[in-house]
Length: 77
Image (tube, rainbow, N blue to C red; front, side, top):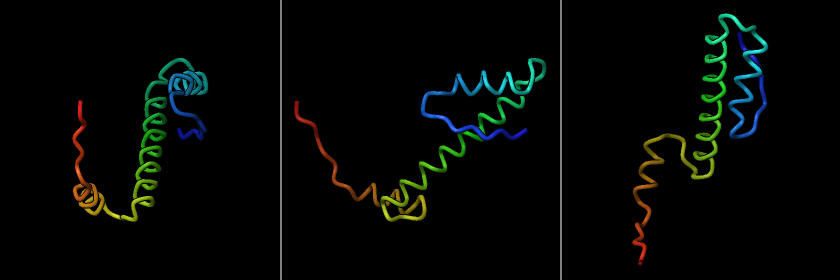
């Protein structure tokens, strides 16, 4: 089962209850968990794409190199 749900951050409880009601009370957890995982994976891919676009990188290794080249700062107390 694939359900298209648009949500905001921290709305996972609402997603779970909506999906549980949509697929019925018995044997619903597999469908609920699969849909929730698909939603979270899409969010992670979206965030990764945004980070790559903002930094001008296309691969994880490039991003790591870029982050490694940043100056370190020491916070004074």
